[in-house]
Length: 488
Ligand code: GLN
Image 1 (cartoon, rainbow, N blue to C red):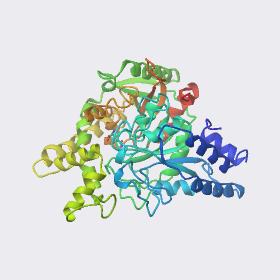
Image 2 (cartoon, protein in one colour; image 1 turned 180 degrees about the vertical axis):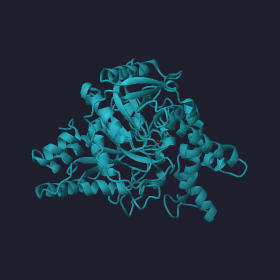
Image 3 (cartoon, rainbow, N blue to C red; image 1 turned 120 degrees about the vertical axis):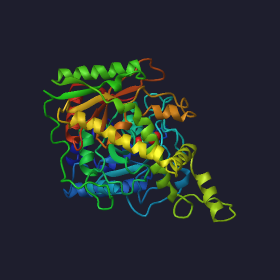
Image 4 (cartoon, protein in one colour; image 1 turned 90 degrees about the vertical axis):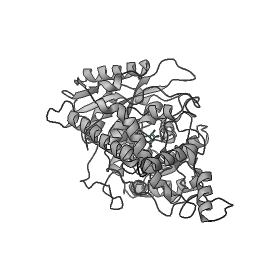
């Protein structure tokens, strides 16, 4: 039962072959028996209460495709009933007075919350080793990182601890852990998913999205979690759409852009091999590969690591021990209380980013760093637009690796922030441009250690082209079975 897709579970629930309560119990038991540290807060009673409500809805035929489906939320989405920590000591005991819009939307659809998922502190990281509550282990090889920052979300799906999870992507945090854990995740176009109640890291980049086993499941989850929200000033007002409407379209004639910058030095040979094999599969499905160039790709690291910390330094100023968060026990005066509370409450990576952010925004450096970064951000977006939308529309989608390597060993990059930042090279540019991007499993790396280490294929599309991305991913998943493989 735990290996089934959302689509399959939905049918079983609605034909009453299994109840929401039975399903929730099954996954709660699996979570209880897991040693991955993927979950931070689980509350059986709360979950079973939601499951009973779902069963009532099913009994009275008041259903959506997600009614009764167990889901787990990244601990960056605030929840009224479960604690919300953002992986930080700062919010160790925080209970939100309201649900994030995304959580509200899923509750309204009738999903059953299994609990909250571990993540890097305030979503800053690429290995899920920056969580105050300890790292998450990669279910394929427990000595490896699961990727970050949504490491708990990807690990939970890979280990079949939940059929559905929410995640957020600021610079790759849906795609990269999906790649490293061998699951399917999509970051939609910026503005599609409400950021209300999603604890802010870098507001111009943060975007929620789903992680699941298949593209079709991701589409079902996107259908529920997208939509205009008045409470998010960057939410986009668009008519509701069915993201799974073109799943079965043929890929004949699809033009896939292959950016040469995604295949240069730094890309591990085993990752390249798996990605190239996937591209050959696409050719068999009728697609053509087109060589393209996105020369600004390498600038996305310096640009992102100026803009994201700048926004973070501002967003995180609210955690002062008064309005929110941890408050130091001993202090002399107000200023001392702020200083001590923040010094004690934030971890090293968060402090590093606040320092960098405050620096690049300060008088005399703003023009040299922040403003320059914003200009290059625009050029990065234009490069994508030229390839996908320009007068000579070179391609319909872009493909390449998600991560330059497979998952690395736990502890390997802990003390090396730059090594962590470099791991984001292929995901950051999509985020800076606000484009949708996804990761689907396409094989395994070579040199198995204590288990296999998955490889993900990245698919990037034009603005609001999620339905096409899901179609392109779904067609591949009809002729391959990487997405159905599960760790031992
Ligand atoms: N790894 C990137 C960072 O550390 C991206 C994180 C994210 O997307 N939340 O900022």
